Amino acid sequence: MSTAPVTEIDLKSFAVDPYPDLARMRASAPITFVPQLGATLFTRRDDIHTHEKRIEVFSSHQPDGLMTKLMGENMMRKDGAAHLAERRALFPTLSPRTVAEHWRPIFEARMQGLLDDLRPRGACDFVRDFAMPASAEALKAITGLTEMTAAEMDAVSQAMIDGCANYAGDAQIEARCHEATALIDAHIGRMTQSARAHPGRDALSVQLAAGLPMASLRANIKLIISGGQNEPRDAIAGTAFALLTHSAQLTDVLRGGRAWTDAFAEYARWMSPIGMSPRQIAKSDEVNGIRFEPGERVFFMFGSAGRDEAHFDWPDRFDITRDTQAAISFGAGPHFCAGAAAARCLVAEVALPMAFAALPGLRLTDDVPFAGWAFRGPLHMPVAWDI
Image (tube, rainbow, N blue to C red; front, side, top):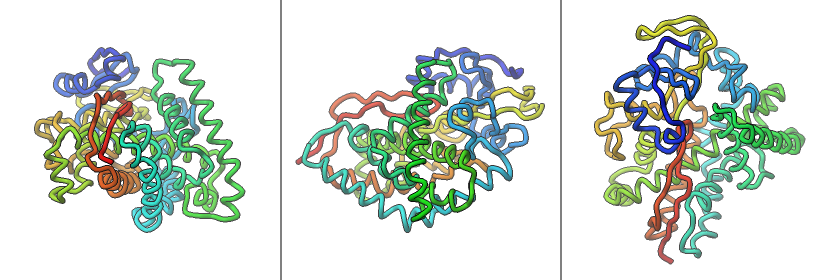
């Protein structure tokens, strides 16, 4: 372990609400070893922003890491030229221009279908009945795994997310993750011949066209699913929750005083759907007087960076009028989220404005519990609207 001071946490309470513990760490031990996680946590925004870019020390290459063992070695677990080559291979799918010109009309059509089915009901669980299938339908198109159901997409994503955060070594969580990755591999196998014969702009097609090895292709599609299902789902539902519980800010957005993108950016800072990014020490180094040795595990806590008092006044408040430029909700440096443009488009340009327009008088009807620290979002969200 590093020479960082030790901070003890209760894992169950940390999963329910990590922010009090993270605030305590920022104040008293901003770089701290947490035995319950087996890692040294970086909790201040500026430390994370600086050292995440130092890939020669804080390496993404983690052959013994949970993600690599469970999902294969994807581009997020590679550095330098290897990472850049696979990122470039996927660029035709995820570029801002492709998102705006190709995926946005597809997103809009899928959202319209979902909302046409929902509108007559007058009530639903916004997570299960809208945010989940909205994210899944977009992801089916982007990955090229169009034969997957929305429920399958959500289930395999959650199983991989749970597996990658399974630092306690729960055997059942690991088994569910293996079942999920096997199902994804089966879908890739079924769609590969079609993608070769009729290539599109989806991730399966462009990786095949780039000649990536099948092991890398499979691992990258699993990466896209693990990050591209849960996080947009949680951001769609979570941003809607934040606005519904801050009525003046919702009115400001609906009247055009503020943009939906402002609400999304503030929510991502405030509740951080991506709570952390793991790294492995590649060579000996010292940061702020703390020694690190090769093989040690480090977590860059994006969820803590978004509430850093050095950059954000009253950071625990949701406020769409604040300047969020200092937030690093999508990471920083060479591993900045490749799907950021697609996420912004789906959440802030399509799903949220279309949902609030189609469901007049949208309102909460019960409490909304949140959970998670590595990945965080609402578990369920009962709502009703006028019909």
